[in-house]
Amino acid sequence: MLSKTHIAFPSLDQLLTGGGDARIALDDDGYNKYGCGIVPDSLSLAFGSATASTISATARAAANAVYQKMAAVNGGAEYYPLVEHELELVRQELRQLCGLTENLESADLAATDVVFAASGTDLHLIAAQMLALSSQDGQSALPMLVIMVDPAETGSSVPAALSGQHFSNRSALDVTVTAGETIPGSIPTELRTISIRAGDGSARNLQDVDAEVRALTEAAIAQHRQVMLVLADVSKTGMIAPAIDVATGLSLQYRHNFHVMVDACQFRISNASLHAYLQQGFLVAVTGSKFLSGPSFSGALFVPAPVAKKLKSLSLPLALQAYSSRADWPRDWPGADKLGRQVNTGLLLRWVAALAELRAFRQLPETAIHRFVLQFGHAVQSYFKHSPHLVLLPIVIPERGVLHENVSWDQLPSIFPFVIKDASGQHFLNREQTMLVYRRLQKEKHMQLGQPVLCGVRQQTPVSALRLCLSARLIVSAIDGEGDSAEKVIEDALLVLDTAAQLAAQFEQV
Image (cartoon, rainbow, N blue to C red; front, top):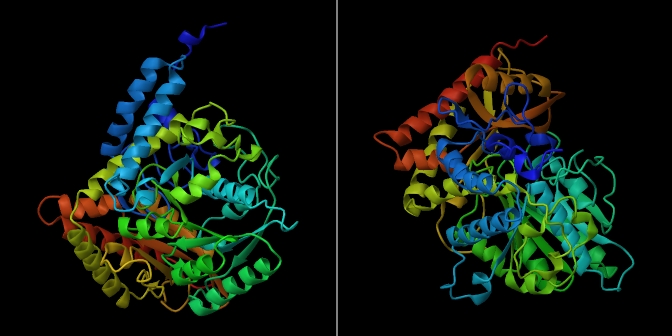
């Protein structure tokens, strides 16, 4: 048998696609489930960041620099301490880039903890299990109630994760599991979902959504139950739901029974918004693979200091053993000590890549970002007004006034969802036809949009919405590039829309 020193260390490509689940496995053409690769592709017109992005040359170079340190150790006794150290460096830089530094006026804000996980779905599992554990106070025999918006707007695997179930056939730490089965050692929860779109795909009245959240919460509290609300900011189509003031109001009213995790996995929030959520005592889940356009599968959970103080001494549920490594948690979190020391090197490298994108984005003036996002939005919405084949869904402006008074780019839309009509311009494409347009854009045209999102029924036809998305990388290119960079980004976006319309025009109503 070969000694350990003769075992070939995995390649960078292997590690970038490891430590997740089946969704990031590459097919024979080198693409994952989302149609993205791990080799930079400068020719692609990438406007699909609400789903995923192909790694950039800058991000891959950053990941490779850390990879070389890993390869030099080659799995020996120094390997775990090295990965743990590098993850701690990522943790500290992520906090620094998010403005969570020691010179803040709020000591609690400066002491925010960060827990890493392979994906946003994994973060939902971790948060729900932690809160369910902390909620076992003996006042009620009923499980913690978890409230979330429609999974079509967040993630199809999220309900399973929040319910303590496996959500893929392979866990983040490469354990073979069965999707849909209850995770051994998980703490039971009860899940309720709330629709935020009507049957025709239009946005529901937010007041009705908020009323449902209040009713579910108040009924559960009356039974002496604990409640976890997952606040989407933003959803797949750019919505915030329920309203932020509903979450803050219920949190104030039921402080000891009501817990909030902000699903900000798109990471389309400014530092000011992040800080405001943390000061409310809300957990905040983000990823490096959506707006930041890092490689798929890199999650981080911001834990406010007062919440961390309560949670960190509790021994984590056994259900997390297949999904979380001790290295993913802060060193001063004793409740994580029973987790295995099987490191997730892929997670580390993907976060290193994502930080390269965030670092460049944070160097831009806030006013310049706001100006370009506004310019981009005006150009795109003007295009849709004159398109016979592409129909923009009504844009919901992110309302953050209850959080802070800052004027910021995250108060502008950066996801533009639309449905498609056929050659006649009279009939909507069905979901299968829309998926075909999406795939042809990727494979034939080298163009990427956000993958189709279920969006109700129109003219008796079940439809899906594609999404044109801005990313941090595109904004950096527009502002920090040479010459007419902003105009070039906008021209590319309109070219992608034109091409989608041309593909749609090839369909005729039968």
